Length: 295
Ligand SMILES: [Zn+2]
Image (cartoon, rainbow, N blue to C red; front, side):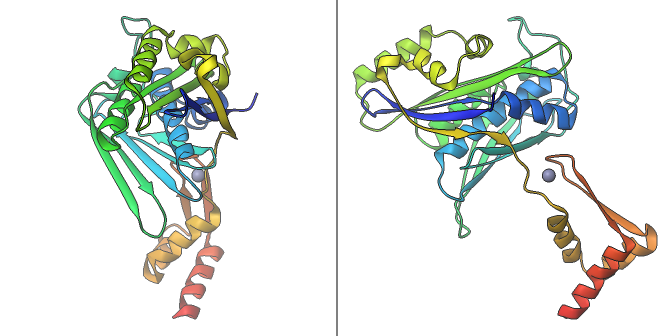
């Protein structure tokens, strides 16, 4: 089953909601980075939030999220766009701890609680929005909730879950973001708070195999819900040999000549997808020709 997300409205359009199934997306990042379970849960939760936030944007807008709580996992960096594409990495993907007291993957211990969650939105034409909040939970969902309230002034409820099999592969992943729009009545907010307080944990909903639509129906009540849109979700990296080649050209003639003299070749590595691109001597010489012909 392919990953996808849904956008929805609830309670007469005064509540906005997103839910995603991200199992294959998180499975792919786990495989590409040979991640251990606690790290997979931390990055998988962050990527699931990111892909839903991407869906909140339009056109060619992009966003980059950095989560760094100064814990053992180090920094997590995630890119997402408005087309359901997301990529990410963690500085220390082989991070794992014993389960916490609730019997869950101890994401807080991996992420830490002494750092920042930073969101940079690239709105095109060099227009950027940056929002930042201190990481106080380290469990990710609570930290995104705080981000929405503090940086975007949108009261929100965020649920994120990643289940990992004993062999480190991903069993299931998904989540939801519920947001209160201006104009929501106190009655609606009261009903919403009551529902969220009584709903099963997101990890349980995911383990039950619920679709994004079913997750929202569970959280908001099927009668209150209007599904607006549905979008495929996937791990996607836009790196290429050409793109890295342009970066090498940008280093300049002298630097490239040093690569030729010292190594006889160059290698470029993508942190996001772990792809490695090779540039043999002839290609590096071609780059120098290109620089000289443009000079
Ligand atoms: Zn890549």
